[in-house]
Image (cartoon, rainbow, N blue to C red; front, side, top):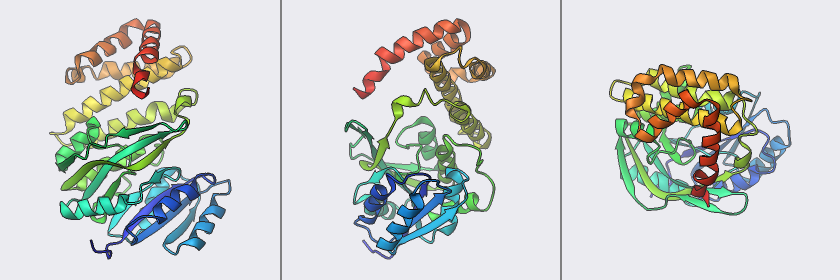
Length: 331
């Protein structure tokens, strides 16, 4: 494969002094060498800038960018404006990638004439466990609508940006308009993916796990619930509903309702008395979307009925379900 096609790899950085070098070294070690590694420091207050400068001194392919804090979407957009590559990739600054990930993704993009090439990933836990999603080797070709449906349904398309390679021709809408809401802190990557897949004619997915997602502190997510974690996922799905065309609208509404259920379940784990105001808002959103319940599976329709009618008893039932049944997925 020719090595005259540049890939720009964008790494947003905010207070990652302890993890960044490990991440960037895994990018520097790629078997595909024609890389532009753009490190966007988003106003870090720790020693991240020193780490970035150290890495830039080590490898001339590294492009440091320093900006005031504006959030991860702002950092990614700054990286996109700086990028010169024909293809664009994203890596989170505390994750790692397999040595051949970009060679693998670019080869598939070229072989299948695809605007987006993506792959499976590994979830690496603090205790050393690794879950693979899913490493079957399967190859799936997606046209525009199939890719968007798979993204909304979580089939083959991980909502993160980090296990993908995008042709730069997909970027025009993101760079020349204000479509990205910078106030969104959670699921912002899903929204950016939706815009990018909307511009793609063809995507190719091969289920080999080339990206390493470091699942740090996942068990503490309930304790750190805030307005963004509660309402941003619903806001993102609402935006997607508003921009989806007629064929995709039912899939967008289904994703919206399922997200409302998931958010309410999260509140139930945190305590419905503690989160009574947001719980009431989410119940109302579910009630207002009643005509779309028929798009859901029977189990999900039962959950909605329970949410709307059982109130605090739902918390007891769901906590039992989550503790004794759902957690078995990661055993």
